[in-house]
Each structure stands twice: as C-alpha cells, then as structure tokens.
Length: 172
Image (cartoon, rainbow, N blue to C red; front, side, top):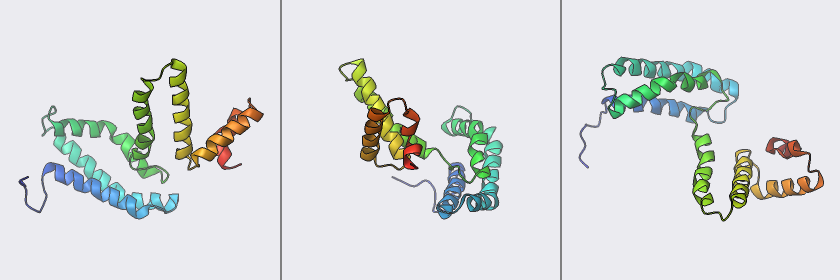
C-alpha cells in the first residue's frame, strides 16, 4: 500500500489520533495508582489535551462536510463529549467503555446460539447461565467456584438471593 503522507503525520485525522494516543499514554502510566493520584494526574496532564481535542472538533465541525465519514465522526464525538470527559473528574472511571464492551460480547455471540435452542425455556436457561458467568468474571471470581457456591446456597436458602450476588460472595 502506497503512503500518501511522509513520516510526519499532520493530516486532520492524524492530529486527533495523536491527541487520543497521548490520553491513552497517560492512562497507561497511571494504571495501578490510587484514585486520588489518577485524578490529580488527569487534571494536570489529560485535561489540557482533552480541551485541545474539543477545540479541534469545534473548529473543524463547520469545515468538514457533515455527511463524510470524518464529519460523522466529529458530530458523534461532540455529541458524546460531555460523557467522555467525565473520566477527568473521577479517578475511578475509565477513559473508555472497552471493559463493558468486552463483557457484552459473549451475550452477542450467545444471542446467535440461543436462536438454535430447542425451546424458549432452554434459551432462557442459557441466557441466565451466560449472565452468571459474565458477572462472576466481571467481579474477578472463579466461575466454577461461584456457580457451585450459588447452587449450594440456593438449595439451602432459596429466598436469600441477595447473598448470592458476586460482591456479597466475594466478601463473605
């Protein structure tokens, strides 16, 4: 594939990708730090970059045809910007929703598999099991142990569902 630009990338998209790359670089450096440290670093280092990104989007919104791919991306980014920048105000938040997207993926795959269930009851049971498995994973539990604990406890105390929530099992 022939390169259209030299080594120095200064195209419109390259500028935005560079800014986003800097934000992810900051996130990589603060991984494992306390919530307070993350917040302080984001405020001092990431916030100016986010402001630059926002200003670039505003500046180019009228210059780029809205029906073009870049125009659509700019509109989408501006529509989501308020939500996006919330991570700057809370050290517990992630810069993106990749973790949530990964958690949903098995359900998307499962949805296709459930089409081939023999009965609605079977599809429902599969969906419930998927939900339990993914919830256990999201809470850093061993799936097999979590399911076994749930089955044992529900047999002993069928009305004590709250005790089976992963965050309650994790800390019991």
